Image 1 (cartoon, rainbow, N blue to C red):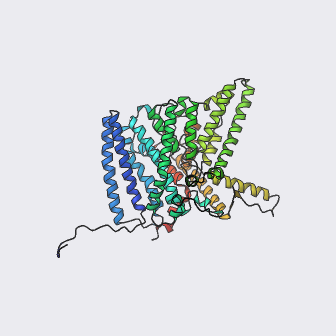
Image 2: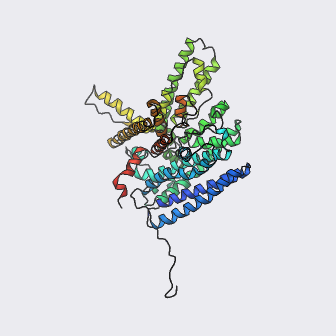
Image 3: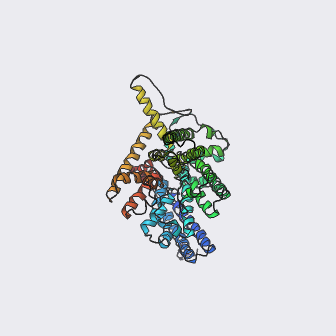
Length: 522
């Protein structure tokens, strides 16, 4: 540069933790998704929809570029910048994704569209679309694609954001009193990346590690559903919903309308791996396949499902005896299958309904109690998975501690350590479990009170709060026996529920950590 010339450009010096780049990366990913949907709309001959998605493609790319330029010059200085970036993703991301919904769905406003896409990104599966048949096919695929992307973000965030901070389920696993096993394949070991300063490097590593297995499970599920006779388009949408444990309906009548036990079996085989903690899958990818057998959460899930299925089926059987219908052996087996599928579907917080669930009540002439499904949804799946809820490990530890305290009433001097599998649980872990459960109950109560202020009945408000905080959107329509339970809520009520979805997905401990003053200290 010659003397006296003016330097109009200078390279940007990166001074942040890398978390600020995650937001621009998400917007670029949205832009790619918009472009794919524009191509799909052209392929099906829907030019108005294609035009909207094309405009959104350009807008999302420009917005991502602007965010990247601004945040690289003024990076996030918060101590927990990765957590802050994740919160911004869940709160502002649905607003970007909702533009096509607000433009193209009949009768939809911006709040309705925001609710729909917030439900997709958080993998809740609560829908306020009155008739799915009136929605353009491309929009149905767009919602399912966002749900699949939201499930993938859950897993990446678990390793890149939650694990280094020991929250999101890792606070319990890291408190186990056990020796650390040396990984067989260091490239797959999360410990290598947990102490790095930049969240971007951890996120890139997690995305590379999980991307192929996650995509492969979606493809296998889609192929299995198509093999059972489900149309290819609907099979793809349901596969995205199964792997992300999002119970969206993509056809009139929902998944139960197919009436196929083989389709439900394929769906179940996709839901179960998605509800297992990502740390367990990482151990399996490192060649330690016995991790599935040793994982306590898988055993807790099986115990909970077997207990619920046994109680419900015995109730049906007794009802069938009273109505003299026990000779219908095939109906009894189908009722057993419907109960089993529903138990797994709701403990994984997916919320898909079996075609034989209603048949179980017909077989016994009794109304099946929904309280069991509510309990399973609250318990939820594995920690650091796409499933919601309290998580199996926390629920099991709380139950064990309660039993120990009851035993101490008669034997006060007895020392009974709490174990989870082969691991001894420390007092620090139990304190965290109690704090989390207290915050979870408080969140349910506050959300229900806010909904009652909008004119909603107390019972309905409580069920709606549990549905969103456990990220089990189909729960409320099932309990109220109303497919449009989310549709007629006021806008302010839907915004309250959106907050519940975000808190349920990020978990209360993460939200509290984000609100801590330490987060904002440089």
